[in-house]
Image (cartoon, rainbow, N blue to C red):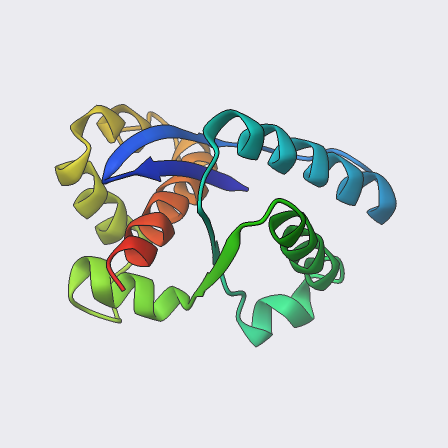
Length: 146
């Protein structure tokens, strides 16, 4: 899961977090702890989340429960939730709904050059690993420019 914290256009935190829990309840608890910690540290006003496509919801049996838990944590923390359509995010950021994730990452690097090292990876696996972080930054930027 990619995570980014923006405040006034400044990228304050970025990263990828993984969950290794083998059952849904443990995963949801770990997710809640991680989100609550980030909310406590950074005190955001809005939680921007990429709205999963129907295809992704059908292919991932736990994704609906994950989305529900994210909403519960946000509402419980007094945050407004902004669901961002992935196509709309690419369109706002790159000017084209057909932009690729790679093009989106390159656009983000122009705004935040220090992220270039996460894109210039030595292996496809590393590039695949960091792509959710670029997507999270894109969602955050898209939310602030609605």
